[in-house]
Length: 258
Length: 187
Image 1 (cartoon, each protein chain N blue to C red):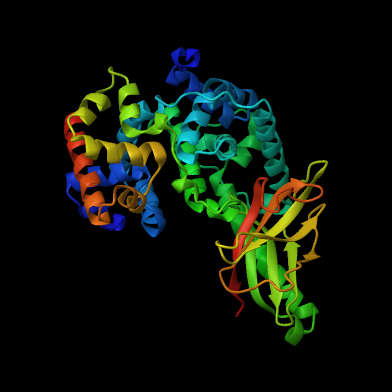
Image 2 (cartoon, helix red, strand yellow; image 1 turned 30 degrees about the horizontal axis):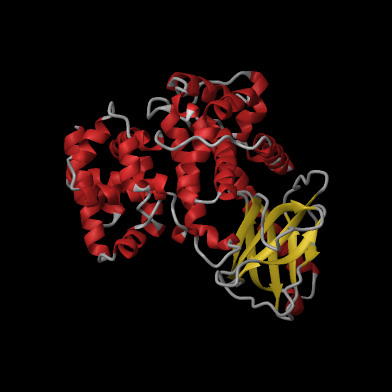
């Protein structure tokens, strides 16, 4: 049963679907469709909320586990990292009117800005535009035949801001170009990973101490369409485990350049 | 366990804190953390089985709570369910996506759950005061077990079918019918 047709379903089916969603049983494309449906259908959203309230009794049976002392400071570090990372200079040019929420105190303008969905959408558009401008600039400035990327991956932050692009070229070179300043705390570095096969797992292809253009070392690694690239925050010497351990700064998959 | 007797703060405290988060008050986020982090790790641990992943889910959840606090709308639901929905979504993403950072060959979902997370054990811990318990009791034990497995351990239809050696279609229709019965009972 496709969630896109929930309005045409009987009340029982809608109830069951809302319950399945609250249980976490809706996956993949159905989940995306259901999430969109929720935005547009307050009755369905209310049905989901009622299930959540009931199922909260089950969460209440989980035995509490005292958090390690470091957890809160990890959260604070991440808040500081993402806040600084998300300070592109083009923001003023894309600032649309705020949503019609009650006005927040003036002192909170920064967080207000940070939390504005509209701004993020604007920032995403700005990021995408920046990608295009950048790609166009590359194409004009350099020898077209040699330099035109075969594939491009735009790495987005969780807030859908384009943070970097990965370009792959016909001669096998792969480069990453940041589009945003990314704050890297003392003693940390940005590590770039690629994943082409879940069975093999992610492989490190670069480690940089700050956001800058860099060649990625794919060497003998496969490279194809829909291949995942991501940037994580790791210790300055790279991930101790050889796998991503820190927060994901941005990620994206390759697509064929036209 | 003594911790079990700690009464969670009133939902209104969480909602006040969320409003303060929305206006940029980090201390308000810390208040939510102090009140809920231990329970949240417990919930995430049941889903993710590994402590490090559970802590990662809680860390991510707090970043998301902070970031999306302006989108919290008290008209549409309680602050506490909003926070736990964020945690649950994040935990399920990690659970289902986490082969990405898999360091062992065994998917998280196949790790043995603690006996504490067994459906009937969870059932016995459900508060008598909650309508959910009485309504779950009206379902045949295997059917309520499936609903609890899905919620507590975050199993998919396919994983439940595999574990119980049942056809996936049967699992889907049992869950659907169980939810409809539950809704009738819960009103």
